[in-house]
Image 1 (cartoon, rainbow, N blue to C red):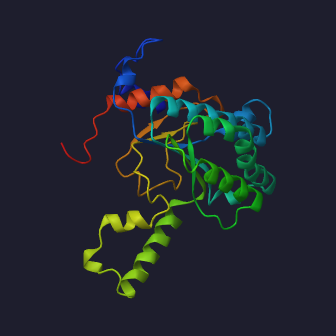
Image 2: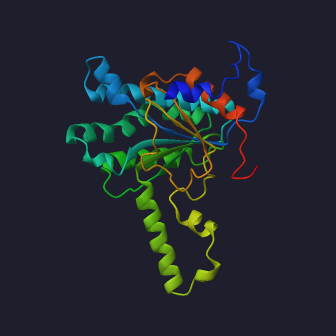
Length: 255
């Protein structure tokens, strides 16, 4: 399926070292479903947590690649509201990764003018996870480069239900006329408020689904899938996705 998908867009990629594509338009906002950590580990006879730890290194690699390309926003699906169903040992390890990642990489993020944000529900997250994320958000708040947005304890259906509930209260209490309800009202009530919709969604590991990720915001995003597991996802894979995006014509439902 992935092979056929790629064959639909058969325009040759630039040769190694050729950077003319960098002068073309790059997506403003890239969102990534980082998938395949566990399968990568299993294929090597390692525990699943080894895959998550290796995937953490890919986060740094892709963040720096996005920053070099001048991408404005990079949203990474780090932990979903459904991931709490996983074994407790795995969840506990995943909750410690933000603390480890940010303790190691925060200085480099600062040097590269990267601003850290979080999109998700803080309720239920361990204190040590929240403290690490909040510290990074605070320290990088003045940075003006790439926005690195972690979707942590995030679920799109819950996000939309909460937004609709909020709008319903506003209408009930007279702050919003139902006849004047527009898409912008829902946009402003979502956890992604303040971010543009993703131009490009990347999903690794060969799965072809959205997994409850930014369902409203991805309405007209370009989708790019790869069989590569997240720990193996390289700069070249990321550049391939960007070049594929540049070959597409975005019509937003028009001709």
